[in-house]
Each structure stands twice: as structure tokens, then as C-alpha cells.
Image 1 (tube, rainbow, N blue to C red):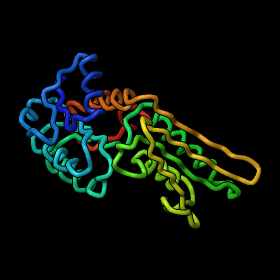
Image 2: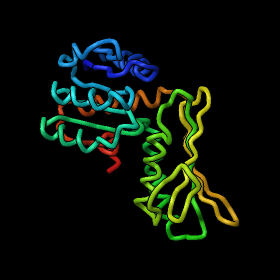
Image 3: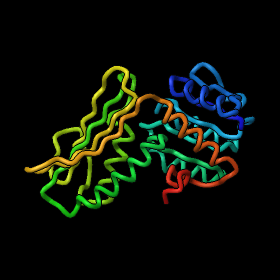
Image 4: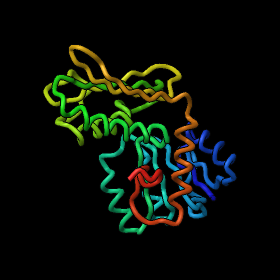
Length: 233
């Protein structure tokens, strides 16, 4: 499989290493200093760039008729625009806040726990996400996905980085050195605490999941999610 890497920072380099180990070929390493030359030769593109260029990267894939897997967060206010363009161009698109196989299982656990806890109003919820200091967005896309999962399965209506008001989920965003990503969802009552937690030990899990998604999407058309890739639907 020929892969275009859109974004060649630490994640892009990790994806490159694992993709080569799996027998794939890298035909483009797009950073701020080069062009999209070579994109049309790719079987699939993997976008781990920055919010400011994610839309341009994804759009370029649709115009080049190249399926795209995007793990960039912080740009999702334009997600519907990219979905519409994908449909117009009959493209293929997966966008996920986190491609780690473990995190996607964690999403499912979070949804299930939220549905159970919604019956017990003696508990309140909060979340914490910890990432490296180079992460540009806060809270993380993964934390937002976790909050949305709770909202869809409970009486909570929104999330906030500030002190939570009624029906809000407080998210604490912590930035510290050399932390790939830790997410904790905690339910508190007067008598006990229930918590679920996912800790990433390195970037390899994110990279491997993105490559698995890229392998899966080649030859397909439509808008997909990691639920489709992992057959969790």
C-alpha cells in the first residue's frame, strides 16, 4: 500500500516506522516546506498535521481521489464541510479523535458506564486528560469524544473547562512533559468513587490504529468511523 503522510511531526514519523514494518511504502511526507506532489500516487493518505492545515490536507485528498484517514483535532467546526466535499467527490473519509485500538474500546466502555450511571443521581462526573506540552488544543479531542459519549447516554448536556454548573461535565486539561495521553472518567458520590482510565505508554498505539484504518478504507467510498473499522457497530 502506498501511503501519503500529511504531517511529518513525531506522530507522522511513528506512522512511517510502523507502516514500513508492515510492508507499506511512503510516497509523500508533507510538512510546511513542501507541496502535495506525489499525493495522487498514493492509495491512501494519513493526516496527523495541525488544525490550521487539516482542512486543506483533507480537501486535497478528495480532489485527488485519495481516501483519507485524519487524526488531527481542533478543526472539527468544519467537519460537516469536509463530509459534504467527500460526498460530492465520492471519496472515502475517516476522522477520529483517537485511533488507538485501546482508546476506541475505552470509548465503548465509557458509553456503557454512562448509560448505567444515568439511573443514579447521587453521582456526579468529571474528567481529566493529561498530554505533552506540545499538544495545541485543550481539552483533547479524545476528552471531547468521551464527554459526548456521556452526554448521549445521560442527562448531561455539555462539557466545560470551567467550574461545572448543572448538567455540565467538568474537564481538567493538564499539560506536562513526555505524556502521550492519559484520560480518566470519574463518578463521585458521598460514599464512593468509580473511575475508568486509559493510559497510553507511547505513540505506537495511535499510529498502528491509524494504519489499520488506512488499510481498511482502501477501495471504499463513504464516511466511516473506527466503529466500522473495528466492527464495534
